[in-house]
Image (cartoon, rainbow, N blue to C red; front, side, top):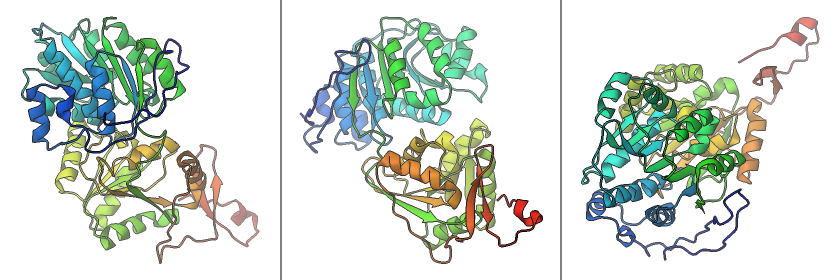
Length: 441
């Protein structure tokens, strides 16, 4: 076997008493995709992608899925989990061939974002290119009529976001009563985005006799509760330490005043000759503003966030991948789901409000065994956010002050009612006018 089972723990989940946590010690080179019993068509597609060895999550998940078990997997981004469910799903559908019928779906994959849905469907096409299966993708932000026309003749595999899928269900444009395999990808993110009720409505439309798989970053209480509602005696697989960032990522904190962040970012990109940089901001407006500022500095940049049309988001991502632009500025909608091969640099222009999102953000780099660099520009306002991230990671992140960008020690942080913060320069003046003036940056 390509991993050692270190501990077998009986979980405390209701109805999950026989479920097992797997802890592995990956023995590199001891297993190949040929060992799973996958079809020649699937192995041929894998070979064309030049994948030689399955990742730990693939080693553990693929046999479980092939045996028909329900499964709950905790795996960080960049671990190969998409292939971990796509390959055995294709194999199971191949072993039980059926003719497509009107509006029917055999395998349903739910994702939280359009970007992730597109990438999952691309993986389905890539690994299933030599199989006779028809797949499609549906999400909001685009015309629903074209999606309805495709679904009218039935598909084998449907990748969807919850909201648009329910729209199609309500218009009787898709029949979920024949779904054999249900996959929830990044289920915790779907819960965070408020899709819990949509997911439950979708599940009520599915046959009870199906195989269900759930993938998430962490085993939270909410995930356990959701899993208990629709998984049957699932195998539980954990392939990475909980909430830990990928170890191949070099993480650095650059303390800097808030008003000089953009200036420092431009300096780092140009002085270090960074060619491909993913930059995260907290807000859509901030992403647009930073993009324009970088363009004014002579650095090609584009933004991706929820207010962009799907066509604009697709073009922005494509331009970034092709090197047409050097910088992609994104909100947390892109913290999960963006799949960019060998992305070298991620920058937190602003730290996320939720510590776990830091892990998801920097997980865009250092994927599939490659090294990556994550830089965070941290002002005094974000001291508490940084402390929470370090508590989550159980380690202090290295701080490095960039010469000429030293923080002004006279600037103090002060909270304001809506939960944000601003920087105020200390003053020796004591007149009422200066005592109450606030400089919001």
